[in-house]
Structure formats: C-alpha cells, structure tokens
Amino acid sequence: MSQRAEAIAERVEAFVRDVVIPYEKDPRIAVHGHGPGEDLVAELRAKAKRQ
Image (cartoon, rainbow, N blue to C red; front, top):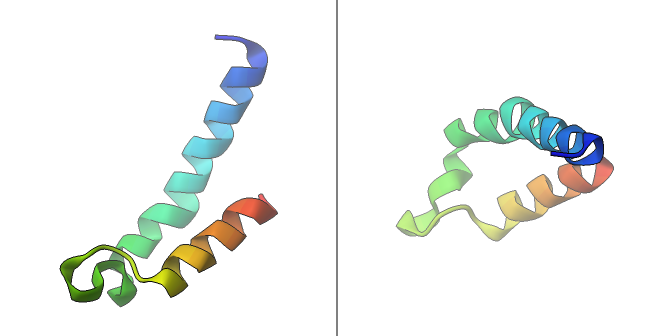
C-alpha cells in the first residue's frame, strides 16, 4: 500500500472510531427499523467533509 493510501486509511479509521461509532447509541440510528434518519446522515456527512 502506498504512503498516501496508508494515510487515507488511517484518517478513515480514526473518523470511524472517534465519530461514527459513538453515534451507534444515538436514537436516530434506527428510524422505523430502516437505518439512520436523514438528519443523522446529513450530520455525519458534514462532519466527514470538515475532516
């Protein structure tokens, strides 16, 4: 794996660990049993773009 690919993988891993996993306890994660609601998805996308 190239250094660039390793750096990207490390950033993704940190984002999932530090941001996404804590959201698993958010009540918006299972709206009517169909996964996360649009508001939660938008919130996570905004956080990802800021990274």
